[in-house]
Image (cartoon, rainbow, N blue to C red; front, side, top):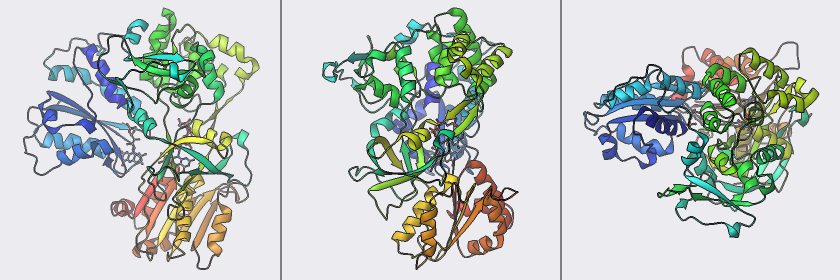
Length: 614
Ligand SMILES: Cc1cc2nc3c(=O)[nH]c(=O)nc-3n(C[C@H](O)[C@H](O)[C@H](O)COP(=O)(O)OP(=O)(O)OC[C@H]3O[C@@H](n4cnc5c(N)ncnc54)[C@H](O)[C@@H]3O)c2cc1C
Ligand SMILES: Cc1cc2nc3c(=O)[nH]c(=O)nc-3n(C[C@H](O)[C@H](O)[C@H](O)COP(=O)(O)O)c2cc1C
């Protein structure tokens, strides 16, 4: 949706008129009448469209649709997917194929965004390879700008504010806020919609799962149970996903509030009203009235540096012309911005602000509309709905990474020829600390593992996953997971317990570093092995650091190749969960064990191989 909106905004700079239509509101007759359509479509599940696009694809592939249904329609497609999935971008590919098959004219090549690498870059590249000239030609306009950049350039800060549909009103008391009946609930985009549909739920169990945790060093794995008994709207099953909305750390919220001149207003309430001259109804970007603190903590991504397109939207507010030009040139240099915000460097939003926005003047209401929205994070449910439908459990590890010292980042920036006008002041403020490596902590995982306590309420929602147990109890079940990849299998083991040991053969292959340090759910797994009848037939462990050479789950899969092949012959279902790299290694080993070629792909097509990787 963000990509589609970006195209809509850029179109006017190329003297084109565009409007974004949500697939949910798609109308076959209107669709066909368009001169040019740019389809931006994601792939989810196992090569499936998102919920809002299901109807569109049903219609597109309907055999009764006339062979020339799209004659006169010019189109191009940008698919959003992830190469880790077998059905990479299948929806984008299908849209591309069927629109042409039924008479449409492709005016520009299919784009395939890969979320495993850098989907934003893929999108930018797809655009830059000639999308706008192709669209202008399709609309009967000449393309006369050799460099392909829009006529508009960067708007002034005043124009950027004027283009925003909403204004923010503050009041010490929510009752004193104005109510604009045309400012509607529901959310302006996908994340906005999520906020409106989420539920508040209390944590009822919080348990460290490591034998030797060290949270300050980033080593903590927690099991958390959420109370959902009073939320009937949450419908979930074992090993589905629980989406959790993180809250930004307080010091970051306070820093931004101060920078926006709103630190004395943190506990004031805010409401949205339409900007002057806006007569149409406008959706709220997030639930309001709320306090300024809530808006900055829950609905703004204040930790990660903004994407290039979001950064460009903030750039006009840098008042100093030289500073602004320096920042824009950095943002336009894709590899440089990628380096600055990627692995190992990862300048965060606050650091970015300090380095480049020293002269920026931006008010709270504008910032709240231009700042990227906070994303919910999915966690594989680690509990059984059969055992207890009223409690949802998850298993979370802190995401930690060591980053370059800020002094080194500033030096590298200078060496690359980029000036960071606020860097010197920032380094001076930090003193000796600027020379030390920085510790990156994931926002949601850090919050869940280090801050959340029993009784705390968080915003959550559940969504289905592809993990489903075989119906027949005689079907063998093979589960492979490392680290928090054990989550769905803890859920399965609880499910087997609730089924009273009905399953005939269940094997869990689990990996971690040491049996004495991070053997998650050891007590429960031991109990499941001892039960009568046995809940878990076999537990195979790979402790990577207990011998000279590393041993991982894929090595255990290799060792047991013949046994696994026999179980597959007997109809086994295989489930894999955990890190993406682990998933790839398991797939390779399974293919070897099962006789080469893409045996796993065939099992997957039958629904007998299911993976969830992150
Ligand atoms: C379908 C699905 C199921 C998931 N299930 C679980 C689960 O059961 N348990 C669990 O702990 N996590 C799970 N995750 C991952 C989880 O959603 C979050 O991505 C993770 O907790 C990090 O979020 P964060 O807010 O802490 O990090 P953020 O603040 O969002 O930072 C993440 C950044 O750190 C980098 N990074 C480095 N290492 C990692 C890593 N190991 N994981 C993610 N990002 C990393 C990324 O490049 C990214 O830029 C799942 C993800 C998906 C897509
Ligand atoms: C549960 C799940 C299933 C997915 N299945 C596929 C898939 O089958 N094929 C694919 O190419 N990408 C798949 N993806 C990746 C998404 O398509 C990718 O993350 C994309 O960026 C989503 O775009 P969006 O963020 O605009 O929704 C999947 C992602 C998730 C979380």
